Image 1 (cartoon, helix red, strand yellow):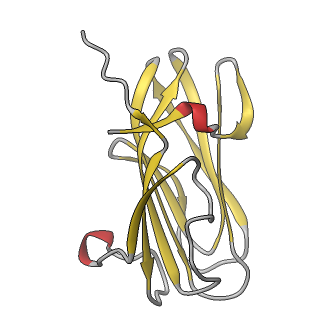
Image 2 (spheres, rainbow, N blue to C red):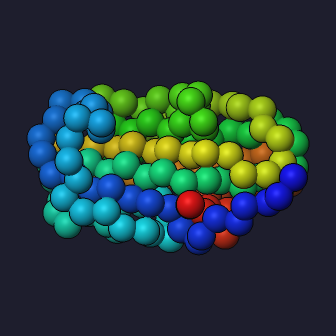
Image 3 (cartoon, one colour):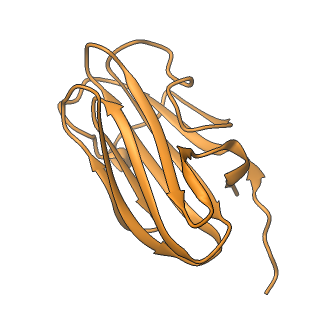
Length: 145
């Protein structure tokens, strides 16, 4: 098998608008698209009424059970492939939600979606697994096509 080495960073689409829950990202047009080092709120141009969609790959070092979680205000979800691993949707104060998924060593598609309506903002994404203590997913583990 040929290893396709992704480019550093993940693709971030930034949207402006007002939603009560995670929007249908296929139905809205991003205000901007850029490659970012990490999954956080840095790409946002304002404090409220925006959404973010991050897509790329996360690389895990060995086979095993991994926990992925998001801490967000307002809503967020994290997918590995087509599997919803962390469901933190809806309007809410900052809170952590996570889940487990068994992964083989190597690269796996990751997608994190987030929206912010009003009030305070927060978004961070953590993982842990064999040989990895709970931590924010480091830029070194993220890539994109």
